[in-house]
Length: 247
Picture 1 (cartoon, rainbow, N blue to C red):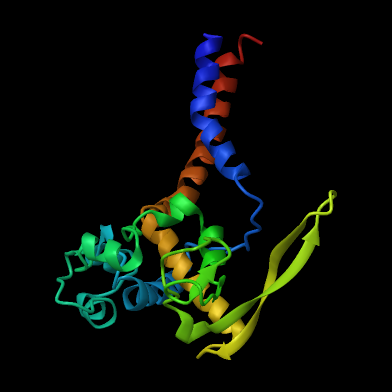
Picture 2 (spheres, rainbow, N blue to C red; picture 1 turned 180 degrees about the horizontal axis):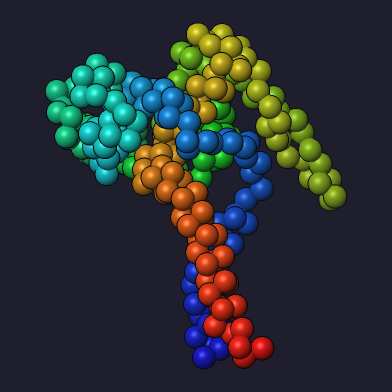
């Protein structure tokens, strides 16, 4: 029995540990609140305006968003549906995979479960870590995803920034250049605090997109806990009644 338990432990937990220990990248906390429906709505608008041109979310239907966020079909059509799609359609893009690979050097990933695959802190840090790099095809690079093939689609909002590079020496005297921060060289439409809030909304939507049923679970969870608390009291009183004569 013990060997089986050990095998199950390594199968379930080892990949998580390997993923967690990969690299020394410091991520900023996104502090996502999935019960903030207004943030999800704002993030949904950002997603369809800036992401859905290339990235699909083929596991989600517009109608499901409307149901979860209490949006009418008219609101969905005016705010989220920018193509000829219908309310009941999946959130797909028209870009062909072969075209995307030719333009960006790799297939464009579907973002349906990206928040579960990468984590909200990773996404929040990634979308704020683009910097100018003239050696790259799109003129930008990213400290979280080095040599990323994606252009900085939010640059008009954030502006352009350059990396602050410091030279660090290890114990053996070897020098390494490290990016320690960024310097804004071209202002965007938003100031840094506003841009961070905008990215937070987008990541909130991506978190909802990856697990939309979590909204229902969060709403139902408090009632389940209340039921279990009341049920525990009743079971305890019943147990005392059954065992009264025994003791």
